[in-house]
Amino acid sequence: MLGAASKSAATAVAAFMAWRRTIAGCRALADLTPDQLRDIGCPEPFAPKFVVRVGVGLMTDLMSMR
Image (cartoon, rainbow, N blue to C red):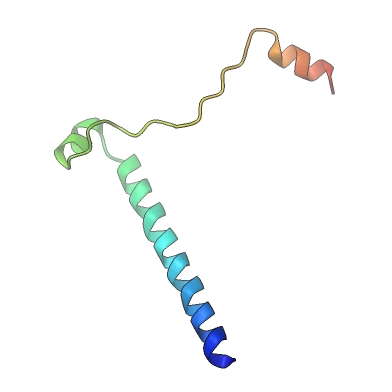
């Protein structure tokens, strides 16, 4: 029982450490200029993947539905 809990805790800690490294890498890349990104081999600067297009009357319609 103690072995399973220890293994589970070790897995959770490893996942958290991997997540922290990923976030740190993303933040470091976000601070680089396009020239620096090309120097390290990134073909283009990272762009947001999610884009929301708001139509002309959408905000008015949404506010009126409140």
